[in-house]
Image 1 (cartoon, chains in turn red, orange):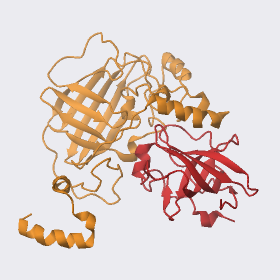
Image 2 (tube, one colour):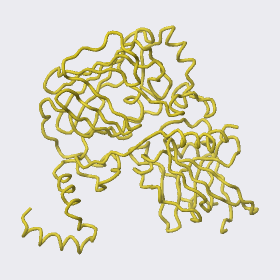
Image 3 (cartoon, chains in turn blue, cyan):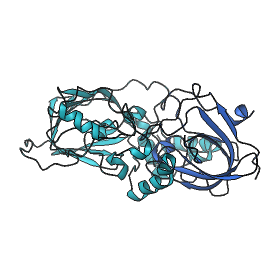
Image 4 (cartoon, rainbow over the protein chains, first blue to last red):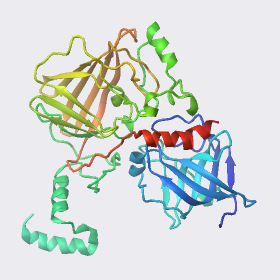
Length: 142
Length: 282
């Protein structure tokens, strides 16, 4: 796996507005934290009330964690250009997420960059909140 | 378009973009869509619901006694944090509200503590389906009923227009009993009673009683615009009547708009709970 690091950015909470989720609030997510990681997709579940992406990602010591990151529902994700077919197991992607507060490898997706460079966001500018996109992985890797 | 013009235009279009050569069936659908002023979506199936970035062209006048069509409020219809405001609770209303643990809104609790009936895929019911997840829906008119067909939970309501009165002592229903009449040529009024007390009013866990009466006013402003006002009259739960939606704007979508499914499947909801919600709150 090409994973080199996991970058944790603190204090960006004011700059990044959390994605809007249709059903549940954000009380479980640490809105001050953002993880950016190279990931290998293991499963993509296209379901209500939320879709979720399962993937493996290694930290800088090479320890692989099995992550689960939710998105909004299929209707919202379709509006954002996602689909049931957008990931398949084994795909190498870069995931930016907000983790939950309890330290479990669970979060919600802010964006995914596919192997071909395409960026999939979780917001619709002008529709789902202000037109603020998550910073690109290249910008946030320090 | 004349056949001669087509022979000129289609090959030219094909050079520019091969995807522009559709089958005759899809061409007919696209042609119908193109006749509509809102013909933005290119997708003929599972049409995205995305607010247009640019102002739409000026609309034609409202047709008389006609609110049929596919309507969408885009993101404004989702209302994850509940209604904007409501009248003060009665003592009963307050007591009920305290037993409702919502996942969003001013009284939100963390994922594992939510007791929203929607989480187990109970019906949203009426009028929560207007105050939460109001996504694209079709209004269809028949001689005796106006039908409302909603994307969210793929449910429908029938509003009787045959002159019958509301039931006096109705057996409660998730979506109640509705009758409607034309207040004027551009304003359709619906009254609903017999609503199941188990449903929440919105995503913020606001309650209602089985005695609630709901009035919806659909005002066709012009060909492409429908204004929806919803009045809640529930003296058992609220100290005075209040408006859940006030001249809320719905935009007409192209006739080709393909409304998707958005169904809460209990097996999927259970899997989400086990896989994401519970581990996130442990």
